[in-house]
Amino acid sequence: MLLLNRFLIAFAFLQPAAQGEFVPVKPGEGTEQLPAGPLVIAAYAIIWVAMMFYLWTIWRRLNKVETDMRALERRKSTK
Amino acid sequence: MRKLFMPLLVVATAMFAYAPFMIDQAAYESSMGLVSKIFYFHAPSGMVMLLSAVVCGIASALYLWRRNPGADRLAMASAELTVLYGLIVIATGPLWARKAWGIWWDWDARLTMSFVGWLIAISYLFVRKYGGPGSDKLGAALAVFGTANVPFIYLSVNFWRTLHPKTSVVPTLPPLIRGPFWFSALALFLMYLLLLTARLHLERQRAALDALYLAEED
Amino acid sequence: MFTRTALLVLKKDFAIEVRSREILYTTLLFALSCVLIFSIAFVKEGEPLLDAAAGILWIAVEFAGTLALGKTFERERYSETLRALLLAPAPRAAIYVGKMLGVVVLLAVAEALLVPLVALLFHAPLLAQPLLLMALVAAGTIGFSSVGTLFAAMLVRARSRDVMLPILLYPMTVPVMIAGVRGTSALMQSPADVPSAIMWIGLLASMDVVFMTIALWTFEPLMTE
Figure 1 (tube, rainbow over the protein chains, first blue to last red):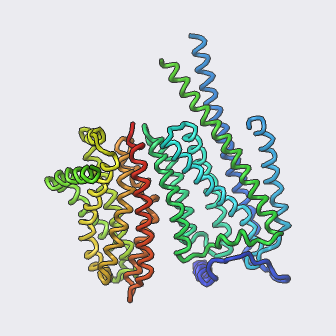
Figure 2: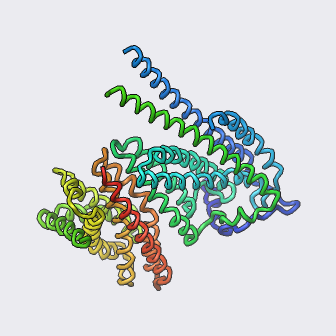
Figure 3: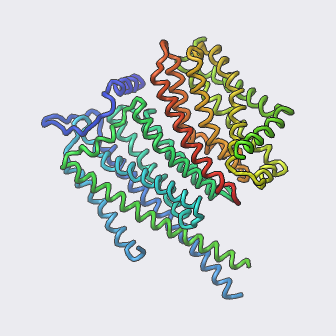
């Protein structure tokens, strides 16, 4: 496993640096060694989860503030 | 905006749900195959993150010199969104890099600088939360300096050895790719606007609550 | 008026420091301990790692600088002397410049010790291009101190200022550190890579100008209650 990692890191450095434009695939090419599907799905899921979680935290904080506001107004009217 | 919020949220969510189908139709990139599909979300998120950081910097400068409380609220909201979008960029990037470069992370100029920018945004929120009295001005100065750092961050990308694809990738996209790319960019941007509105509303309510407390004390 | 106020503030800090020498000694000792710690981390079988000296030098400067900044303003906080300074009928920006010059002088003394020490202990040809190295170190120190002085001054009133200063300052000075480390390692190559060192010095100088401008601009509104 360690050896494989070493190999992958070495491979990364052999790669040409900084691609300058988008190169479309040639027909017949497109074999994959590492399954890319889970990575893509994970990336998409992360975006959904992050956005929804953030929206939920806003909603929760807003609820808290509005509860405080109502409590304050009730206190004022009973005084 | 309040009336439009719910319908727009539905539109943005639908766009997000539809985006994968559009991306699926798009042509494959030559050297990377399926994993290059992450690019459709990764790059626009980076753009929105940068935009959000610039908004935060400008709003902070306005607050510093004009003492406009609305600008302070905008700075606060956009700083949080910078952190959120930064999280998306930093989380989706390694997933792509693992396949394309064979490593999760590399201390390449642009990665380092996104990380630094993200850290500055987090430290802004940290200051606002734990800074105590005067933290609003302290945070504003931090944001102004952070924004002033952006051009240097950008310059260092060109001077340093780099693995990250250059920014010239986006304008040279072929038409078949351009459609889905700008579609997801639009979805992410719309989501940004909606989240910003919601966050601003929260900050306004908080200010109103503070004003109520103050009125109560008098 | 402006220069005179700045020099007066500098002279005041100098007079206090000459009496106790507390900040100078703490900074120097701290820088030395930094170098010692790095020697443990970056020396392998008696041979220091290639290019490590550049990083060690700049990190030692940054850490010692943070300590010096914290200490300088801690002194101003006792008996509210900073407030008294700000109340004086003098341009605020001049006070900032005076405080910054004090930090720069202090760091320059620390660097005068650090550079030969690092060169000696890590077998680094740091002094091969003394003039260029001096320009690089000076530009880097000014960049670091311009941001650092502003933040340290703001944090005087904040809670948990000891933790806050490094947290805010380190990400903010990353471009300065990159330029400093890259420039130094360019100078250390044999033969020295002069064009890229000059490029990094230029970048540092433009950073100094931008940081100083913003700091002078923001000091006034920041320090007004």
